[in-house]
Every structure is written in C-alpha cells, then in structure tokens.
Length: 416
Ligand SMILES: C[S@@+](CC[C@H](N)C(=O)[O-])C[C@H]1O[C@@H](n2cnc3c(N)ncnc32)[C@H](O)[C@@H]1O
Image (cartoon, rainbow, N blue to C red; front, side, top):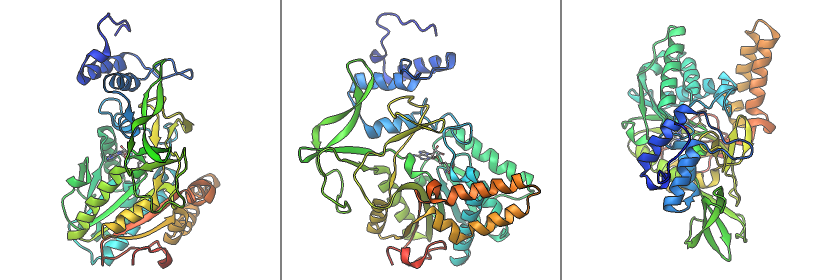
C-alpha cells in the first residue's frame, strides 16, 4: 500500500468490510503506532474514526469493546500482551504459587462436593494458560481429581487459545503427566452443564463498561467522538439517560461532575452462573482489581508497556480496563439467589491458603540465593498491600445450599 489515496477513495464511503480489508493490507505493509505527538493513527484508530464519521459518537462501552475485541485489530485478538516484554504482568506470571494454590482450592472443593465425576473445570479469560498449567500441576497430587475433570477455557482470542493449548500440553509432556480433556469456547454458555469449578483472574476488568456523568440533576452517557481537528475526544450524550443504575449502594447522592460506571456483561455472566448453579453444584473464584465499597469515579485507564497511557490513544495497542465494582457484583450475585463469600483481599486469601508456606518450601529447594530470592520477591508482589495484596480482591460464588470452599474467614461470608 503506497500510502496515497485517490479522491473519492474515502474510508467513510466504504462499508465496514471495505475498511477492514483496506486496513488489513495497511497493517501488513507498515508497522504503525501512534507516536508521542499522536500524529500517526493505528489501524484501529483509523477504523474507529471512519465509524464515528459514519455513525456519530460511540458509547464508551462500544469504544472499549472495539479496542479490546475488534475482530481484526482488537488488543487481545491477535497478540500476546503478557509478561515482562508485554504491557502488564498478571499474578500467574508473577509466581507459580498463585496458580498452584488455586488448583489446590479446586481439589479441596471437589472433595467437599463428594468427588463428582464429569466435573467441568472452567477458566474465563485464561491469557497464556499459566494459571491453569500451574493449577493442573498442583492438582496432579490427587490423580482422581484429574481423572474426574474436563478443562473448559472461555477465551475470545484465537491467538491466546493456541498459546494456552501449547503451554498446557508442553508442561504435561515435560512432567510426563496425563492431562484432562481440553475444550475452548468463546462464551460460558458453550460449556456443557455439569458440576462446575470456575476460575477467573483479571477477566472482569477486561469487560467493557458504560460510563455516565451527572450534570444538572441528571445522568448523561459518556461517549467518544472526534473534535474539530479530527482527534478522539470525550463527549456527553445529548439525551438524558434514565436511571442508568441502582444507586442504593452509593455512600452519598451524586453531585455535578460525578461519574458512574456500570458493566452490563458482568450481569449477563452472573445470570449464566446462576443458571448453571440451579442444576448442578457450582463454585467459582473471581479475582480482580477494584474497589470493595461502591463509589463515584472515572476508572477507565490504559496500560502500554507497563506504563499508564491515555485511553484515547494507541487504540488496539494499549490495554484498556476499568476497576471492578465488587459491591455491585456481590449485590447482583445475591439478587440471583447465589451465595457469595468475600470480597477478601488477595493477600488474606492467599495467606489463608498457605502462600507463605509454599514459598518457603520452594525457596528451600533452590540451590542458590538468587533462585530463592525470586520466590520471595514473587510472594511479596502477590501479597504486599502496596503491591497486589490489597487492590486485588477475591470473591467466591456458590450455589444455594452448596459447599463454599476454603480461603475465607467466616466473618467475610456475606450471604449465609
Ligand atoms: C487481563 S487478561 C487475564 C489473563 C489471565 N487470566 C491471567 O491472569 O494472566 C484477560 C483475558 O480475557 C480474555 N478476554 C477478554 N474479553 C473476553 C471475553 N469477552 N470473553 C472471553 N475472554 C475474554 C483475553 O483474551 C485474555 O485472555
């Protein structure tokens, strides 16, 4: 692609498919990245601008959804953003202790459930598959568990599905272990019914949010449009949004300028969980960063090469997320007739499950202090309050009358 466009060859004149084809070629031939002055658009930025010119401003929800999941250029769709060379490091990459303890949590719950056969071990948004790989290695201490479960990954990125399969199979081969059957789905609805154990680490924060701003005693949805220079900008919808959400958990009434965030996909997910739990035992752990007490505020953010960046730049190249609202999550879950334990901090949860003891064991097995130090640093990163220990929180969801699983002090149970 030469970079020159003929008069009349305007992106806005093409259908969406035309834009995709054009940008696909563009993407193949040049490596573009919006530079620090913002004068070069990414392929997704070009596509979104064309869409806005055609359809008008997008809701922040639709903008975030496209940044992460656009079928051609979405952040998660074609790349591996994890690890030291990526944009962020998640808990499973920080230390193997994280996945191992979650694997043992699953074994314990499965035992308390009476060791059901045909049990679905589900992971939502498994990234590189590190968590599941560590969990299966730890769970192999109880061979009957591995013989009783099927692993079901819920993942929208084909590139990451391939990575997950590769890692799980390579690790099993290296250790000479049998692995359970592996399945992939792009939605939880695709997982067949049956007793279920579900893990989700940093999955909810990747689901798109809607944002509203309070102005003159009313809420207006926050949109992404273009300014007079053609750059992305935030706008408010012209029309008032009627009752965007239940504000009963808010500590105070809104004042002008306050932001309110909702995450419609979380409610859909919880309804699916309630459906599963109504016919079979269900236990799930949701782990994410966010706030335990509901609050007004704008938490929409972008991360690029381990640095915070402007969410209106580097579309498709930066991770865009927003905090998880655990108070709403708990309220919605309870409203669906499910039980909830937590939220507790990741620190408390991992310590109760034995993170310190496991780290000590791994450190002792090291031949040199550098190896031992790595495990100590990893543990600190997971549990120290000024690192991931307090910001990250854990919620357990389980069906009415069903077992709750370890890791929560009784005082933290919220729906008994
Ligand atoms: C922040 S990463 C978390 C990865 C992993 N759980 C970890 O702890 O390293 C989010 C993951 O969710 C996946 N994902 C994002 N939106 C999704 C959706 N709507 N349905 C299924 N998977 C999704 C991404 O492709 C990615 O694997």
